[in-house]
Length: 157
Image (cartoon, rainbow, N blue to C red; front, side, top):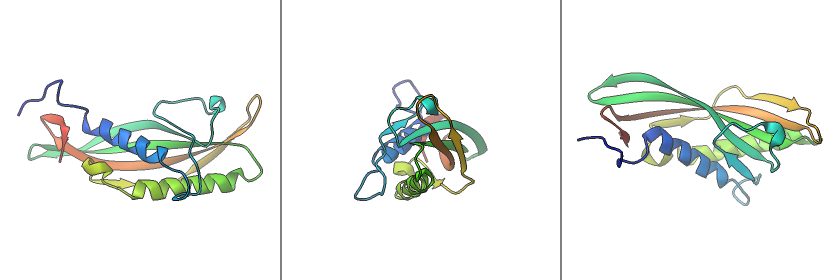
């Protein structure tokens, strides 16, 4: 088997795309929150006009092992949840994070590309004073384990 430019997206890219698609679907009646924006790139939380928003950021990959022509990775992803600051922002943020957990746990194998997705971890909450409006931000860590053929990173195993 040879790997070439027509092989498609690498496994980790498909996983990130799956996470974005999953988060974009958060809306009633299945969830308590309607997510208005999901973005893969680092945005300034103060400049996000549409909230609630989720920024998929800070993904790092660490190889765990390579054997039998397979390589396994652990990918750390940070979901930065952004809301406009209101009197009940903490409650709305908690609902959004609960919705994210439920959404990501509906398919922990990310369409067959991941071994497992874990949403447990320490959540950090921040309040940023903005020029016109304050925002409330929480970072939720997500860990995804996946493997691919060592000679072809587009082939999940």
